[in-house]
Length: 119
Image 1: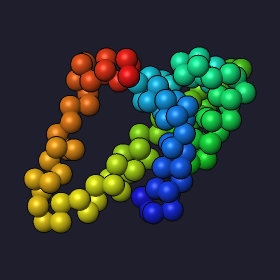
Image 2: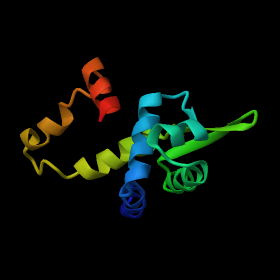
Image 3: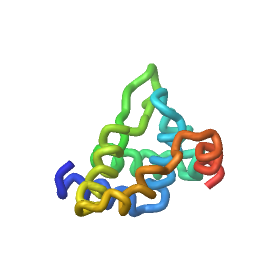
Image 4: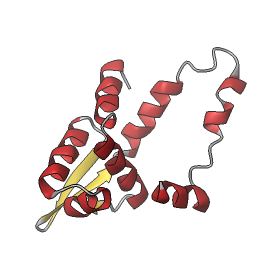
């Protein structure tokens, strides 16, 4: 990920509703969620949800697909991973123990998933 892309992504994530939407879509997994369901999950109106999801899609953090009359959004895991890699790229400066705490997070454990949902 280049710096310009990272800045766009961080800019999109710097708003509370959009950050909550990305987190909800990460939890939803590859099947994603309908736009209305994403809005409901974060307490946003339909028009507000559409605005924020469009912003996230332009930043490359989410992707959409049409399913009948619904637009289904899902997290763009490749882009999110790229953003984390961008942050961590130069972290250790020859000292891998510096990055070990960040790399050792147990993000996929059932407890971590429940904590993410409960916020």
